[in-house]
Length: 159
Image (cartoon, rainbow, N blue to C red):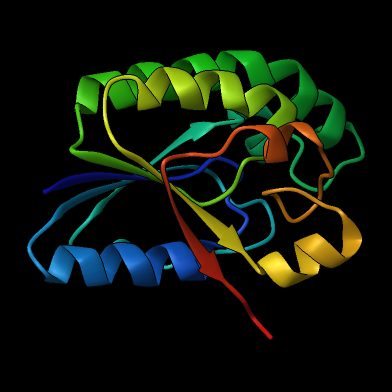
């Protein structure tokens, strides 16, 4: 099976690596679509491909600068377009999305991708999300993320 594993802003590189490695070990062709992790090194891919195509300026040029957030905002739209085009070219059997950085905006591209293939969204630490009203991202809150749901989901909790 061809799997596109999507963690747009590299929120969980160790988790992404472990999941992609395990899926590849089971014989799946896995491509991790993510961004450069600005806070340190990430594990080298083992049996899967990693493409750092999201937020290239803010994660490379600005890294830990206060300007990183402004740059990330400016490059968000082009990054989403690049992500969707890459998913279309990969033509995976399934798209597994780890986080929605901007759920109120991400639902648009997620629905577009889901029109063509199955999409799974992992809701990490959903009990904490419910408790504080946040969404499918570790840093954002959105009512929009609760208004439409993918056809399949996976709940993961750290506590």
